[in-house]
Image (cartoon, rainbow, N blue to C red; front, side, top):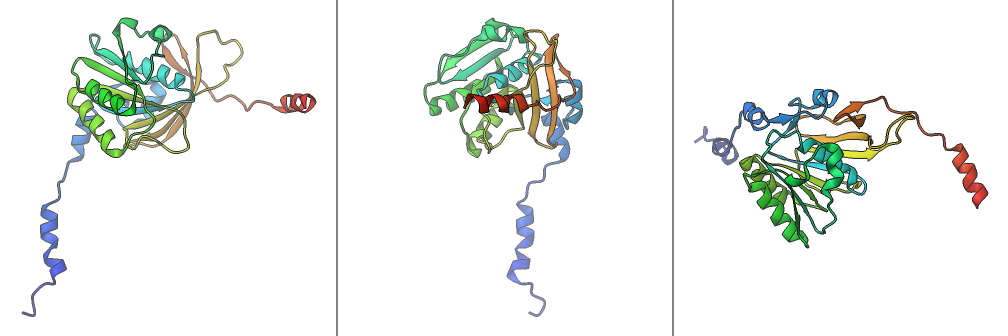
Length: 244
């Protein structure tokens, strides 16, 4: 009787037997399909590109920059026959505005979902569809359970989701593979019309680390440039005092 183990120690083998061990290589296979964002950005991503068949988030003030960023990535997905679905609570989507990013308007399907429950269900069904290559949707918030359902749907069909959110102090989407923040910055002297300049922040990356870049969309690619010097605001402050 003196050699009898305490109850806590006897229960350890049972707990260990219930654990599920997944090899690291399974994650590598899961994110084996990728597309290039740009040469500089790919080097910072753990799988040397943006993983497909999963869900990402693009934050931007007013959503416009996030839509543009997600759209230029969606056209790189090697599925020419795949439909691109935009799900939103209104009819404000204009596919012609994405022509500079070489996204054919005829590939877009715009679905209007009036409330949050309909929008969540529509995004889920679109991600499940084998004929869909990418889903874009402005989303205000999503808990962990909903994000998990979207993620499993994308993994099953191979579709890629981009959740579009307004810039907020705290993430409103519980779980994504990558989280980006796209912000407009002033263009340098001599830049032509139709070349948006962005500050691109990789806020979160599963298996990676945050990073920052500045780039311009030029000649169908993201062209990186060094960060510009801070703007001098002395004259502006003087003008404001005079106006008062």
